[in-house]
Image: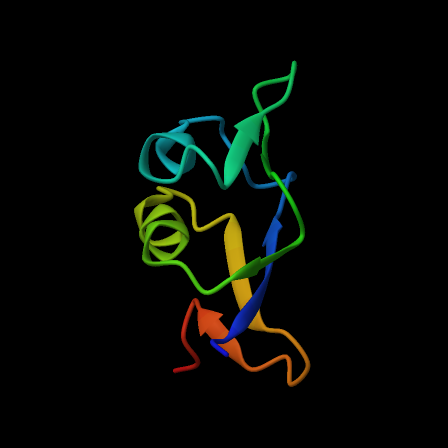
Length: 77
């Protein structure tokens, strides 16, 4: 069985660029205020969701491993 991720969007940082929706349309939606939110807070590890997080111009998306909380994105420095 593969990794599971917790995906969160910091709505105080999100500027509504919709890059996340472009890269992972099954993983993200924009609400009526044009703020990004994950479709679900937990997901199977998915390259498209990672690309969405990496493409966010303000790094509003964080991904951690479910269970351990280990950062997937942004990576620890």
